[in-house]
Image (cartoon, rainbow over all chains, first blue to last red; front, side):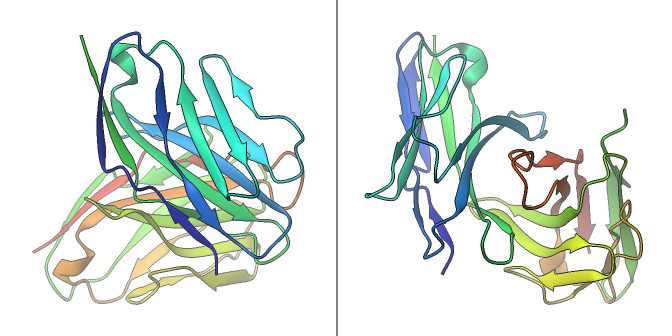
Length: 115
Length: 115
């Protein structure tokens, strides 16, 4: 069954440090995609990064990278050189291309960046 | 470009009342979906659609109805509101089953309170 797990309800990190947010998933579909979204206190959902199951390299977008370990079924988000503006809720999500195409989300991790 | 337009932004209902949350997108997306966000629960999929005339249930469909008569619109109906339906609701859309379907576009959300 399609499942996304984020085990860190909250994290506190010092400004300028790197951050890793954990995400594990479960699927029997060989064709799938993994997403990360940021939700600041304003409530909007901001797309950060995407990784396809057949992509050979880890996805990167500026300070964001996705550490994709297929055998372990993990898709951790890495934020380099964290900034105060990174304080937000972060959601991992998965889409199964070969099945019904629906997209499900994890419960999220609230990240606090300390000055 | 309007993107995903969701109305209303705020709504207060009494138990037993009915209402429809509106969602429209102007990007010709095949895939549209509704999520509810509750503290500690992340985003949970209510219903989704992969095209006009096609709808399917998500993780928490009970108490909600949807229809997809056009590509652009995907309204969510609460037939008899209950306090348990107090939540923030998000509509989201994307392309379906293509390489362009790497991003889910979100509406700005509806804060619904059922008294």
